Length: 230
Image (tube, rainbow, N blue to C red; front, side):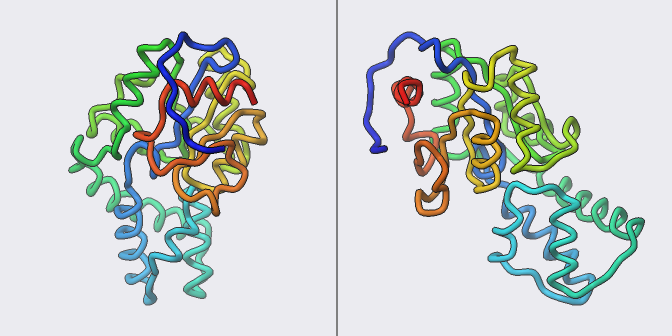
């Protein structure tokens, strides 16, 4: 689907809610995850690359740790893994606690403002357990009616649990939702939930998405109406 700009029109009946992933869609915290995971890997005696960090997009902290330990050929007990995950998270939280509104990705505030004004329901659907802190620090929390994150769900994307829960809390049907995602696993989760998906990033990577853009600043209300007609 090619990008076209449409005039602002009344909200269509088909799509009533927008569900947003956090990292890579609204803000970019990948650099903080990378620094914290790399610090952990270095403490364990091996290095961790940016390419490997890309493979952790959209998956939980525990799954990320398991991948990193496997890359380093390090074996740990479940108790030790929990301690390591906690330590990594403490480093990460210390870094994101210093985030500012300047770290919100381009076009995000304008698009959130437009869809909220148009009457769309808005929720967060993220694997992050620190989403509330990030939204607060970047001053965009007020846009979201519901926050569904790693504290409320037990299954990671591509399982659709996080998006099903978001739809339930917003009191809409899955078919009335559009998901905004930058990760392959997240787009797959949206499609498995029976929702439309807008990918943020590369069309060559996010092949299951109904539409792919570089950032939210490239979107208008018209694109949501266009998706309703698919």
